[in-house]
Every structure is written in C-alpha cells, then in structure tokens.
Amino acid sequence: MESSARALERRYGAAQVRRRLERSGAHPALVRRALEGLAPGELARARAIWAKRFGEPASDPLERARQQRFLQARGFSYDIIRRVVRGSEDD
Image (cartoon, rainbow, N blue to C red; front, side, top):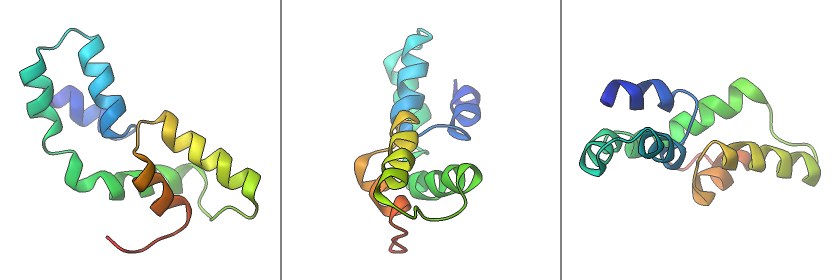
C-alpha cells in the first residue's frame, strides 16, 4: 500500500492519492498510514509537478487559471495551489 502511495505521489497531491487508494479497495487504516508521510512534502511536490509542466509563472490571468486547474485536478489543496502558482516562497 505504501509503495502504491509513493508511486502516486510523484504525480498527484494527497487528496488524489487518497481517492485512488480508496477506489482500489484499500482498508481506511492502511490509506491513512500511507498518507501520513505525504503532507510534509506537499508543497515541494506541487512545485516539482508544476515546474515540470509549466516552468514559469503565468503571464496573464487566463494562464494562471489554467495552471491552478491543473494542480487542482492533481489533488492539491487551494492553499498549496495558490502558493505555487503565485510563486510564494514561504514554506
């Protein structure tokens, strides 16, 4: 279960990892345990995924919205998305 979570975390945020593990029929306690290690690195993972896809800050509001939707679909929280897309460096 934890190996599945590690594989998924390279592409998704904690919410999406949880959904996928639950959909696969994993026991809730196993899902919870697998997700415990994901939260501390959520911002760094979101930045890495965003950088791989976009690489530079949005130049206009439409592009910013597109980048936000991309991260939202990957299962990241609004706070994380806002910090990544706006380039907030505070960790």
